[in-house]
Length: 271
Image (cartoon, rainbow, N blue to C red; front, side, top):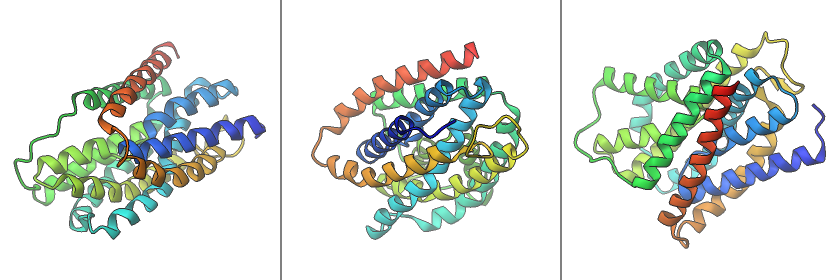
């Protein structure tokens, strides 16, 4: 696969768009990146079973870079609950390893496409409903937090997301203030991404049908260009959130997500 100018432009546009929307709407860029990376890779002759896996893995790898800039901003405001990060991180790393190194490698790309499509459809529905889980209790004990972290890391590894759609509602349900939950979820994105990426690299290391510039399941050109674009525009999106009607935009974006979910489901059932 030759890195033509048009390909670089496509990846840059994807990075700029996902970064801005992530900052504006507080969503993970993976919901946009995975479907469009699947389209980009499919159009360039990557085998069908590989496209979804590489899209998910590459999307997760970009979170390593975007989470750092996000966490710095949240930390300056004193919003990150590092005590919760320390309690959830062991389970997150364990769940991520099981998901990315074990289950991810075994499942077919078509199955992962269906799982991703259902995940995005659920996320879109949550945007339309706009419901916030009732804060009703405290965080569970050690075993409970390890288990919760394991679920967050495992599901994140299968869909290429930073885990915010699971960790934020979970922490809010456990009586963590919503702004602390969002900031802490951003901090958890880094260990989730690192653990999953290591698993993706190891799981795909012995494959002989990978496209050029691949490191395991990670597609390096996509990672570099998208990460650069998203890191630059995420702060702009965060600033725009204070001036634009975010609730209305979430409904519009939710409609787009339904289309992307439908595409991924179609991809999964027809592959």
